[in-house]
Structure formats: C-alpha cells, structure tokens
Amino acid sequence: MNEFSVISDIQLLQTGQIQLVGQVVLGSNITLLVRVTSQDHDVQAIYKPNQGERPLWDFPRYSLSKREVAAFVVSNLLSWDLVPPTVYRQKNAPYGPGSLQLFIPHDPNIHYFNLVNKPKDTIQKIILFDYLINNADRKGGHLIQDENQKLWLIDHGLSFSKEFKLRTVIWDYAGETIPKPLLNDLQSLHEKFLSNSHPLLIKLQKLLSVEERDALSSRIVELLNNPKFPKPEETRRSYPWPLI
Image (cartoon, rainbow, N blue to C red):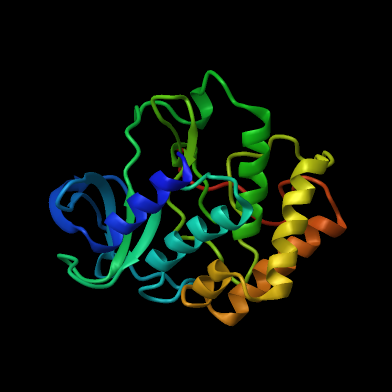
C-alpha cells in the first residue's frame, strides 16, 4: 500500500458517509462491516463503536477502539506497514464514536498456523511489534493475508496496558538476536520518543494515557538494551485462548 493510497484511505475513513453492511458475529465486542463513501471513492471498513465494548476489569471502559488506532500509529512510526489504515471516528458514526479500519479482503480460513509462506523479516517485525504494543491477544486468526500475499495484523483492542500482558501464538525466533536492520528501526523509534515532537506521537497522546505511553517507551529501551526476541514466560500465561 503506497503512501498516497494510505493518505487517501485515511481521509475517506475520517470524513466519508458510513453505511452499515453487516455484523461480524465472531468476537466478544460488537464489530460491524460498513461501507464508507465519498463523491468519487468508497471502501469497506470495520467499525468498532465504543458502546459495543464488553466491560473488562483490566482495561478502561470505552478505550479499546483508541488502542486499535494506536496500533496503526505505532506501525506507522516504525514504517513497518503492518496494520491497515485505522482512524478514530467521532462524528457522523451510526452508533457513536469508535474505530474505523480499512477492510482487507482475505480468506478467513487462512491464518498464522496454516500460512504457506511466512516471510522471516515480516514475522520478526510482527513479534517485535506485539512486544512493543504489549498485545494481550495475538491469536492466529488476527494475522491475515491479502490477495497479494501481504500479511496484515488486525484486532489490537487489548494492547498497550501499562502492565505487561503479552500473549501471542507467535514465538518464533525466541531468544535469538534481533537483526541489525530491525534494531535500527527500534533506535529510530526511540529517538522519535525522545524528541516528543513527531506528529504521530502527538496523536498518540490523545489515544493512550501517560502511563501507557511511558510503558511503551520503556519496552523500546528494553529491546535496545537486550536485543533478543522475547520468550514465553513459565510464570505467567503467555498464550491467548482460543489460539485462533
């Protein structure tokens, strides 16, 4: 997805007219398939309204949709293009404020466990990305493949907790050294956090609490100081359920 296409899709998601297409029946929270239209362009998107969130004891109420957007922001800050364009839509949304994410056409029967090709560089980025955003729910079905075999990551509502909650099915390369190009990307991300002036960081301030942003910054430093891929911990549940 080129930069112009991403900008165009984001503008449409932010301002286009939303029409309900149907409901995604899987999942704990209300998830709606919608069509977003303007005068000369339309796309399908996944709409997750705040009022459709099931209350959770460990995540603040009505915060999951903003975490979806925060994951897209971090993907952009890293220039890794892992998360489809995602915005926080406050106005003219049929069921109130919530996240709106570009829908990626894909075969729902294909998931992490039965992928024919798992590009090493992409999988390594996914592992580090999930560690950075502290993803508590990386199921196999949250990794999808488009018609060009590009891998995308979806469903990031249970991310960015200030408490460490990493749960994922992807533990490839556990304990191995992080390659230099990926460390360079992490160092660049760290420098952006230090500057605290990048436009996307300013956006992140509206999506996450100070404590959650500080925890994210700390995880960047942890990876730079100990450049190894994470390993599952024996003292806590490191895998989500169900796995797909």
